[in-house]
Image (cartoon, rainbow, N blue to C red; front, top):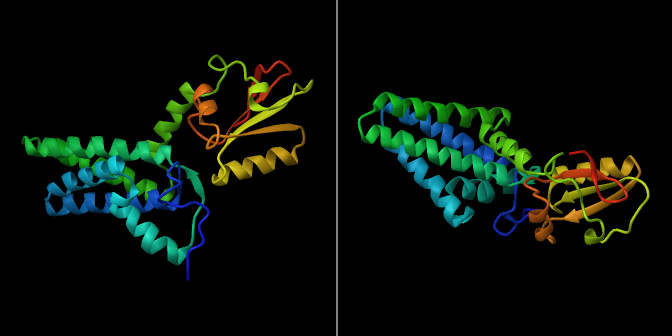
Length: 233
């Protein structure tokens, strides 16, 4: 029976099934513990290499991704769809720590190597079991620092978004058609009433770059002249 997917994992790479990163984290965390238990530190180097290859060449070169999208997802169905940038950044953090651990072992700093390896194992298994991804949270903090917030973006050009001038407040939501949280926020905003303008970042990437949208969904309220009055999400 064919799997019904709202997002093609090999084409729609700007989003990802939220269960895929957790599968990857479970594998990384488990193998890092195996490396510590057996003393086989090259496993850490292999994990770093696999993560780096996946980041550089795409999901088809990521073995945990292949396991999830070709074996697990067809049997259990698609999970919530989210922005792929936070878990991608978390993988970059994983590459950095696993590489540092491998180099520490290579140059004889065994205690440091195992310390870094166990840190990766702990954080990866924490993310896999609870959904709390420290690397993802690091990305989101950085996104808030450079995204839409008071003092950074003060005005949105409503005409540029294809919206006519409105005397009341207008809510502008930057969204992606495959993002689960985006749909939930849109439903919430529509049920609250008021004027809502949607900006699909997959169709208008230039607007995402202009307004510093580092994470979707992002929504702000603007006045008649387009000045941002408050951040909603």
